[in-house]
Length: 222
Image 1 (tube, helix red, strand yellow):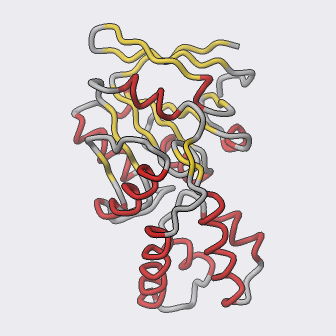
Image 2: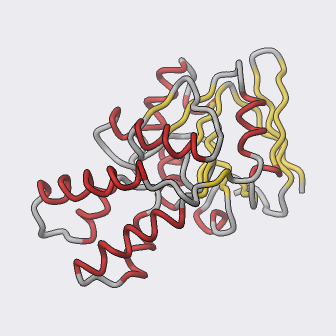
Image 3: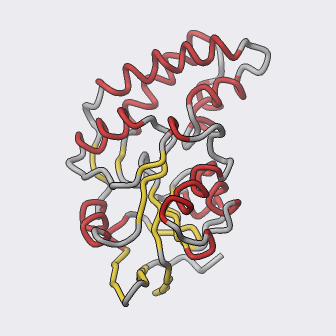
């Protein structure tokens, strides 16, 4: 099935959408879950798309937030330098190249330092507009990050298309009133507008001030 979406702006998640950082993320979280005596499967099912301190707060609801903040900073410091195994999601470089000169933004639960480190490890450019954990008070699935990016770009949320992989991210995009292209084998389970296995199934064209996205997918629109 071929689906065409038109928009004035495109908003891009990072982990799982532009880069595959699964190996390092899951290694660090499995170490953390073992120290906390938590079910590792439950931890891995929750963390993707969220800021670390918010994941910790959900997993350990009675623990002081100050400890979550401290441990999330330690994890972030390791993530920023441990980039072995971080690679491009197929098609990400081509998508970013096609969007140059068009309104687009990175919207990630990582901070700017981590975003730069992971995109560099995958040989991808950092979009000029980047809304990171440094810029928002609430983590995905809250829509704040996507709404902030739309505001910076001067585009109505309904005229934005989001690329996301995680449950939290897809929920945030939909809560922002945006259409969402799910990326990855499990994305379709979270209710995106449509889903692709990777970004090679997406092509970009420009028509005046409009961005035309053509998606080749076996998934029906949702």
